View 1 (cartoon, one colour):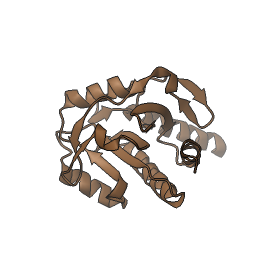
View 2 (tube, rainbow, N blue to C red):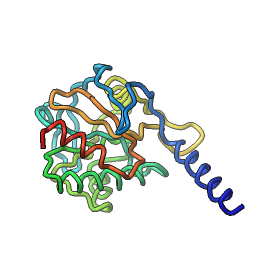
View 3 (tube, rainbow, N blue to C red):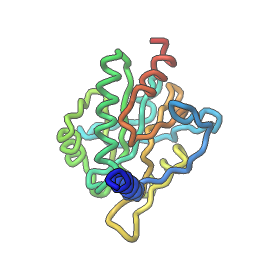
Length: 202
């Protein structure tokens, strides 16, 4: 009976978390993520502002592998798992000697100004040297970026004080192609590190 109650609790908790996440699942599934290379997804041009009020563009990231996700500072559920998992990834990438940028797009740009994003990152102990939290765009712009580049959605939940967004970590290659996605709610980041080692010959 105790085992049944435990499993039921886990299932209900998982369903609760899913309220803040939705991604059009496509691409060829693989053991260590989903291969998106055949979908020909590309990062659309952007010019946004990071937590230090610096301008960051897609061109700034050219020539590098980078990881992207979508979060917001007052997210009531999944972002509280995604950001620590991304932090774990950042630490593992550093230990592996991999020069990879991390970009977190806020899906709540009207609220998430640079100061709020800076405080958000500091509260998690983020190293900002290779991690940009981006804002200073409209709701329509982030919806377009999510849809056109990542085949995902950003929508306000009419029934809850929440924003529906992807919980994936996306791997972008030096040419701006989105080539893989990973479960951002999964704290085992070894598959991402191994993929990057393979891609960079490290």
